[in-house]
Figure (cartoon, one colour):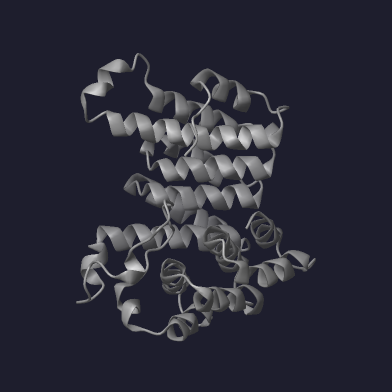
Length: 283
């Protein structure tokens, strides 16, 4: 964690689309940090020290950034991601609007669908279902929104309590990462070998939600063997660009040297979906 610039400077950075993209992207993550610090202090006596509602400013600033096409698709998709990580349903109106905008970039719309799943507001379910119905020829949108619906339904139906009689805390459930993910690892994976979880990951006949759970189980388990299973999925999968892009994202989180060859190969593939190549480059 780094010391953030003043809030006014972060607002200025995102308000001007001509600012360097690195400056605007860093500002988005500093805004997330400011939001989380503010929320953390709301439960103690330090709350009275705040003269402004930092959470409202953060949400408003990111919402304006997402709504402004001059920022470009890459950065706007990053704004949507950060808004989803806040898990604040006040972000939903802007995100929902952009998800349903058929003229917007698929990458931005995909991230909006994933953000709604991360926030988990049940009021967003009709919007997600509409996006599924309206985008039969855009699997990046439909699959993202279906995953969000599956995740929200999983939580609404008891979440981990319905995953079986495995212990609630196990190696594959303890994530060393701070991200809100589109699917939870499965506690039953703790009793499986890394290869067995990899077999689930690469089984294109299984629902995406189940394969995503295997993906995050492998990520949380870590190590070279898990990275190898994920790398195979990145290069061998033929079922879903959305799936491959998430594998690349996970490999980027893991920051393991053994992923470099697979990520480089994915990036070099000119016929690969731009979402996948982008995520491989970022990883």
